[in-house]
Length: 546
Image (cartoon, rainbow, N blue to C red; front, side, top):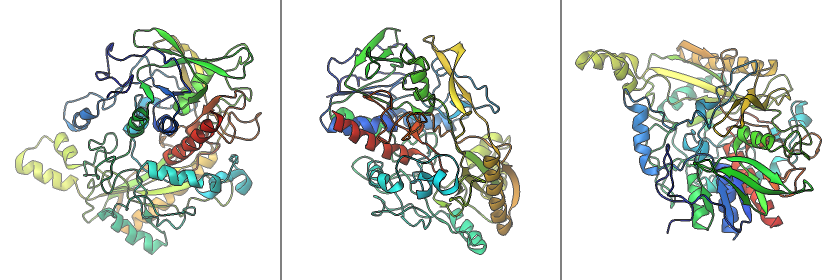
């Protein structure tokens, strides 16, 4: 039986009248956003017996089309995007010191950015939760690692994480990862030799992809196109929990961007989410509890669009922190050629890292997470498609250009700064006439120092290998990892933060915000596992109130 609102026939473009997008009469919880945060909250609350409605701005993509999406990526002359961007729905501005390419890695749709993510899932370090207390930088979280530890374990089970639990720098664990690890790659072994000589410890990477089959998905079969699309479904994406939520009775409605949230006369409670359907009609979805899980850009934007007489600066914004403290992770990298075979591109994801340089001794630089790439240089198909030769000449070209590339990258922390922010740009509007988000973003000296240090470590490794370096990224030509964090930060002080330790707004009794927008600091870890842990925690608190 198809759940209400699930419908078949939702498409990427054009009208769709086959899906009922009218409001539900009785709703305990209305969730805005069907990415990993919203889907996990929906699945947990629906399983607890609550009436749940999820509203998402993007479409419901057909999983049967994933092989075709992979072919879009690989087929010569096919310029269609793997995951489409709607130029009106997804319009934005970037007026900061550095241009921020917001739509370069953003997917709006059921499943959110997990539709195209790489799938790396690590816990934050213990120091990340007490950064201000330990080194005098950033801010402290309203709880420590031990508080979130059981939710990390639950998140790893929900995401079917494969891992070796062999990281000597990671925080303490209660049990091994749910699934066995992926084996080290050929290039991992090459890096391990050099790192051992330099005294750099390497270890495996936890991945939210199946190393063996489960009831939810098959084992990874090695398509190698993990980012931007996994045709087999072995890599976790949030449609898994959307299906669980719908099986438990939740209603998930696609292509209904929420325009604003309305509150009662006292300003104490949200009363409705006002959303628009593809034909432009507006509806009001009432509920007892509201959860906004729209990401680090759209969550603050929705709150700012929901300003009222009681909240003239935006809903839940008595602190003035909504949209402030925008953070991302920065990329540092170095790569080149090695006089030995590296078997590049045999693995489409990272299987080896080093967190040796992660924890900070002081506030001079942010955290550094080293990553040893399995996909350096061109793939054989890339070489073939760019060459004019055929036959033996083409084979010779591939042999010359493929198989000797090597690269090491890093994610680098950016400390929260008030001037980095998401605000509204009234000079530009989306397809519904709402001001678009304006990303105001810049780098500071501590970030540049961390990037510079990452490059120094990378250079030492490649020099030890005897590689000829062909390219370097950082510190000035760096770019973002598209991990949007910090814009509705958690905290104990309602004058300095947007939500409390239970992810509930300081200002409104029935409004929770989940996702990386609530991170007080960002560390240098890929954020999705922490997003999942916080979402499961928030679901428990909503359940308690219901």
